[in-house]
Image (cartoon, rainbow, N blue to C red):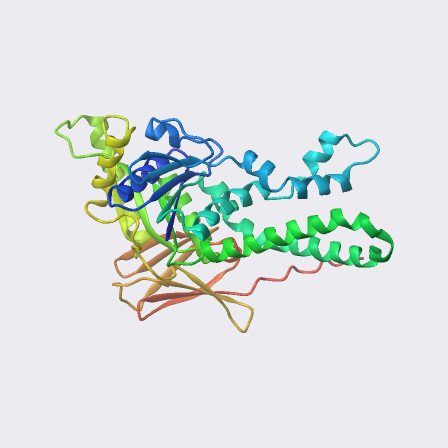
Length: 396
């Protein structure tokens, strides 16, 4: 079972790449589902076929689905939401307002992710390809399992204590709360399974789609940085819409190719050791099965696009005895003792001989001062000082 999740800045073509990957997987004989978790679905537009919130077979071995959070909320979690609404309703609070307030934080994201986990557990398909929402929303979605488990655990302990205290007096009135506790426990258990599935490198892979543009590259770097913090395995990067060589040497295209060449080199430097796949910029729209099949071949060639292309952590953060932190990065095929670092906000500029790399630091490191770095056995280690304590303000 393989789950591949494509994410990236809005408009970079991740829906198209996800659809092309799924189609190629189906052509290789694997039962494949491609599903969209983006609220603004465009998967149906990519295939130029109508889709619904249920998987529909659109080609041999290929099913597609646009996940409906609203439908799942009503089908699976209405009991829990109705019970919470009962607590917040009261004088001056209408039923409509109470219902809105009762939505547990992150419930819509959890439902989308549980949909993915359901397919993994039931193994209805050999591969599940996810067309995710834009980067920021997807990163928030992927942090939800940890946040929700904390929330559910505290609510469950509170409810258990209340029910235990009232049990001698409540009698048949206990039926409602117990149903809610059972629903909450089931949801918590499913979320734990989900977290395990999403972080298993033998099952799940994350791929960032980007274009050779500065803002897009920076957002992709942040995405990979945060995925690393939560131990989500990234196995490659897809660079989309690369201008082809052309006999047209007009000034506009010449400048655009020069800019792209500069950023393509930056991508090679900043995202190593990840494999980097390249997809061309076509003169026509990439819509429909024939165009998507062509894109899959131009991007991945004869490779199976659902295989695991890279294994191993892209970054590791260790706690030091003095309260500092150490960032470890794999930088193979680079040698040298002179490691020069320059930090500006959440950006780190690394120079080792002729090797240069710019990276975005996680928030936990961005607010600390760098103490120096060294290269050992293909691993770059950068130490960060403990956080400085604020100076107490003297009072008269």
